[in-house]
Length: 324
Image (cartoon, rainbow, N blue to C red; front, side, top):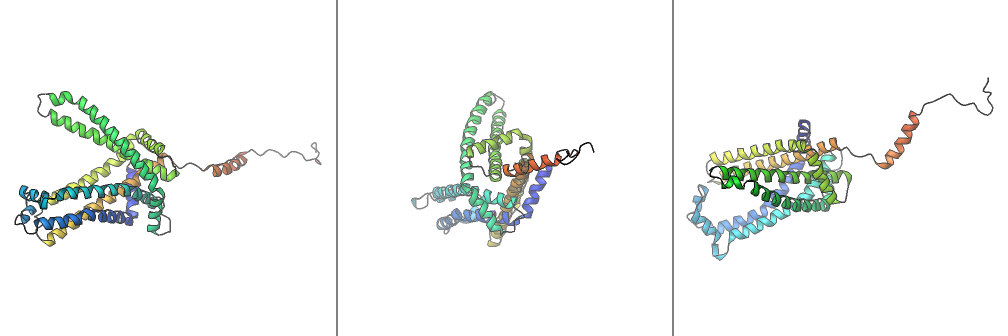
């Protein structure tokens, strides 16, 4: 597992353009709700004396002003826009993953980087999108089943007089849901890797094949993913620690510094995601190497058989005397 993680980090480090391109794409998507939010925020709080207070602490009065500005729930509109952008991001992830696999799998290709990325994204977009839909349905069903099972299992703990029992039951439910969710998301990754390698077209079979692959190698697949999750958690913890101890961003310079730090964190997150895909791809190739094409196998096997056939003494020809 350590070797696969190292290979994934090296693959991501060899392709810095890949992380930068993905970061830029999702940054542009984030501007879609950010610009209306900025305009709405200035319209509501531009002349309010309470506007400066939100830089230091949460204000209920300011929040109510935001939700009831001019009889329109600006916060509700912003949530709708954000949900739409999230849907676009999920759909575009199918294209991004295809481009990612094409770049990571053809590092020696001399063609331009953008050509390779868009070739992979366009080639596998519809298949990866169908895989995402299958994974979403399976994830929703599995989440509902696990929630119902955990509710039944933890009922005695929730109803006990032991005060921490309810918190422990809730924590156990969250852990179970996280593990099951990770199972189906990892299955999606490995299914996409298998489809890109074998160029298969049956997405339902491919997804359940990825699910079976993860279940057969549960320790290894989770062991590869968990260090990247821990690294991401450490990155987010460092950002939260900075936010907690840094002074309020009350000037344009402080706002610019905060923005730069946020983007560094986002770029680090994208780099870890690319490295995880590289590690998963390396592990999948090691466990399930590419099959030998049938044509090449038909050509190689007779040659090998002929090479291994024992050579005996030559039989006498029609004009030879076997006694001589």
